[in-house]
Image (cartoon, rainbow, N blue to C red; front, side):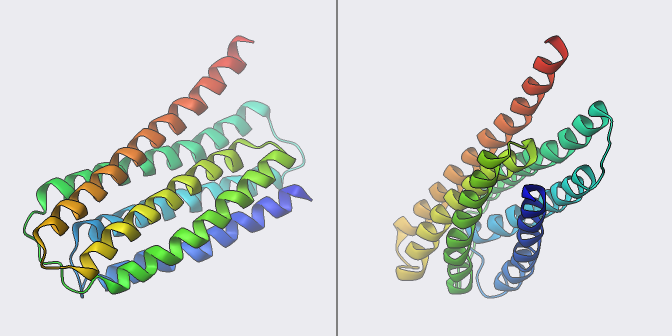
Length: 210
């Protein structure tokens, strides 16, 4: 029964995350904040990773019998996709933040609204995945909980940065806030991505030596 709840939660994650890249992409036509552009890259990479995790979770939990090594391999693939997506998102945000000086900001309100809604939704998913993992420990759900905690923290940072841009777009300090916000988000994603990738590898190595 818990596996069904996990699968439904992952499917909900896919469905709710799917419009994000589309809406953020459309928002870029109205504003070109480096944080906003980087957020589009992040959401696209994370959506791909969530889809992979959902597919793997569905395969693993819908088969009555599965070789343990094959199951570990599938779960490893899903968690690697999440970790690499976080690292890729962080690297993209860092590059954009450092090399987008002087970019026209424009109207960032659409991106700000998406970031606020994202912070609320991702916080709920973080709590939901954490609850499911505590009730029935699962590596995919545990990594999703970590991903959504990072996503909620990132959206909070993006919200703060874009709020400064929206309130005082012509002030010199806004560019620094925008850039610093992107850099903080970038390093947070990269660090959590590395932890996710290495954490899963450590679990597998422990199984092999025990």
